[in-house]
Amino acid sequence: MEDDKIPNNSPDQQINVELPEEIAEGIYSNLAMIAHSNSEFVVDFIRLMPGVPKAKVKSRIIMTPDHAKRLLAALKDNISKYEAAFGKIESGSEGPSFPMNFGGTFGEA
Image (tube, rainbow, N blue to C red):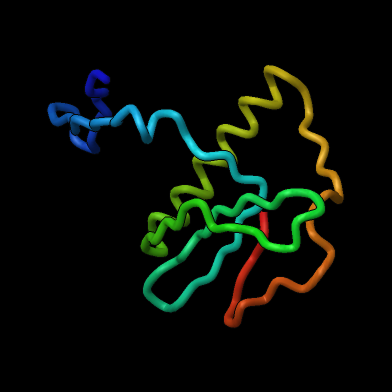
């Protein structure tokens, strides 16, 4: 796959980002669990299948609090653009109803 160029903060610099084919395919996730410490946020992307009592973490992303806040802003911006183009995203109550606290502070998405 060809390298994509993402602009850096300064107008004359660019970062070449390589996207390998096996990563470009993506991984389906229908549950995210988020934990944090004073120095990092950990986001586990999980695939939860109906009727199966065991779920698997498909990917774990670890980032700094600053990057987590930037991700939040980017998601808000993209959701606004999506809803402007396709209509409001309806939030359902499809999430798991059983306790999923693995210790520490966490959130679900």
